[in-house]
Amino acid sequence: MRAMSQLANGDRIHLVDQKRRQYALTLKAGETYQFSGQRIAHDALIGRPDGSIVTLSGGKKMVALRPTFGDYVLKMPRGAQVLYPKDLAIIPMWADVYPGARVFEAGTGSGAMTMALLRAVGPSGLVVTYDIREDFSQTAQTNIARYMNPTNLRCFRKSAYEGIDLLEDQVLFDRVVLDLPEPWHVIPHAVQALRSGGIYLSFVPTIPQVMQTVEALERATVFGMIETFETLLRTWSIQGRSVRPDHRMVAHSGFITVARKVEPGLLGPTMNKSRSITEESEDGVEEAEEEQES
Image (cartoon, rainbow, N blue to C red; front, side, top):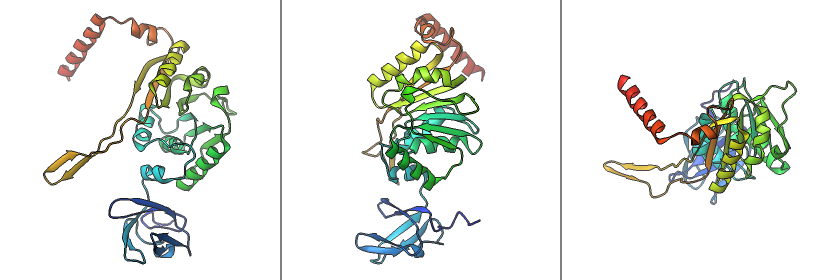
């Protein structure tokens, strides 16, 4: 087994310049990488330690690195628009995707979400993904195989709007994760395919889409603890005593809606909406008392 600290033939790597710009390539023995009139032989990279400084023919120095998952996603070939790393990081946590989980995904796209889910379920779990476009599915499968080559992925050219089929063993899914423009059309199917206590999560870019999704979850009556949120990522510049937020940030990219499949009657939308101001105030007092006791 080769040491993961060394770059090897067939590895997907990034060359990073002094301005932190990244350039992706796949190492192939005997080939040459060209960049702005300069070049470097792949053989000069193969066998070097991960993180080595390499010099191109014109004297330009770059660092050769295996990409992080976030870097790989942003540089991989894409058919559909990929989710940003900030969303890919938080979705498995809010969907509570755990090792060994059986996850249904619709909207394979370029494969970014699929890889995030595969990393979370581990080798003992399973991800089933649908996409109706053959070109998107092929691009996604190539991206996934190049990065992780999983054995626990089932890809289907199907529309989740038409239904969610269980696998041969007829075991229900633990999680349903959707990256589709109209996830509300899938919710009736998710009711049938998701186990009790399971989690539904969808990602959409606009508030009108969120409203229709939440309305569909409420109509289904078996979903409770419905929440919608977005994540904003702002980096900071730290240079000695000069500290300030960066001028650019990754702000709105989409809204995440999460819900639990539960027995109707206690956590559903009717009960939530009927809560009085007095009940909410009592909750606040109880939380404060619990904090003091701890």
